[in-house]
Length: 109
Image 1 (cartoon, rainbow, N blue to C red):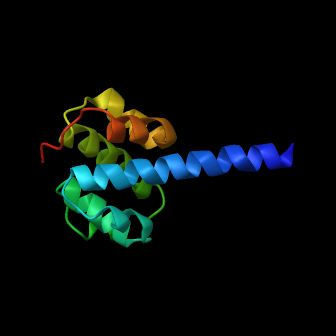
Image 2: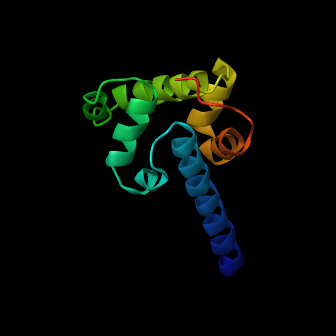
């Protein structure tokens, strides 16, 4: 059973990476940047028009949760989606990021 679970986990990881890659490309950023730790967050902050120093806020306990929710809401807004979709991105990214990536949603900036 462990092998089956590992295959499912790997499939979810690949789906999320492909989703973020496509979201970054839709926003006019290089897709490969989603693979580089910390730099991917800086690029995501650029996409949602937030300053670079918000990355530092993500290292503060509790504040990081608030920042993650705000960034998720802003990401949804940048692609013309509502607050409910933004909450989905924050708490269920393995579902909502691929939906955002592979739908007709266009980056509005």
